[in-house]
Length: 244
Image (tube, rainbow, N blue to C red):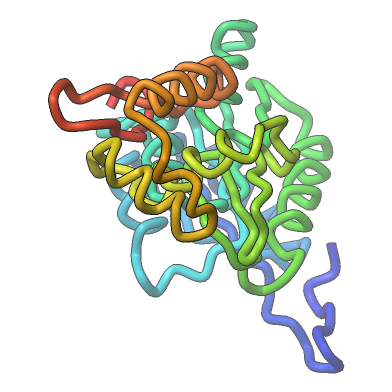
């Protein structure tokens, strides 16, 4: 991928990639290859550093290549944490295991791509170029509400999972939108109805059992997304990363 693309007639900054790999030999080979392609690489050797680098307010990353078997915090955990923060950063996972269960685990955690070691350098370079094209569709991610693999474009009622519009009724979309806006916090049933009523006054005529039915349907529809709607007895609902 050429590094001197232009945006509105101005040169675009070089693509910036995070490489989280604890094997120095592999990391140096990858950095040399990325450098030849005009990609600036930031290299870290453990999961805690990867997590901190991605979460830093000054981070200007276009993508990340993360080894699953990192010390400190494994790559799956790093990936889950960044998705839980609503970060849409494109991520390619590397692993020494080519087991289908591991591949599914990584993709369910929010990976964009997955490559098992040993790999051909040319294949990895091609996958990274594709990854960065997704990350650099614009210099800033499209506006909207994000949590994990979910995205609601700004000003639109449609919710998307992995970029694909979800098959939801208007009420289901409304409830899930409320929970996404409050992700990580407990939301009472009455608060759900109050927020729905901002755009749909008839929602205030609904009773708590109606919310329970909608949430039950949503749980089925978001199964496998890496996110769950947890019931906090006596308080309400909490949208959180599965297993969190």
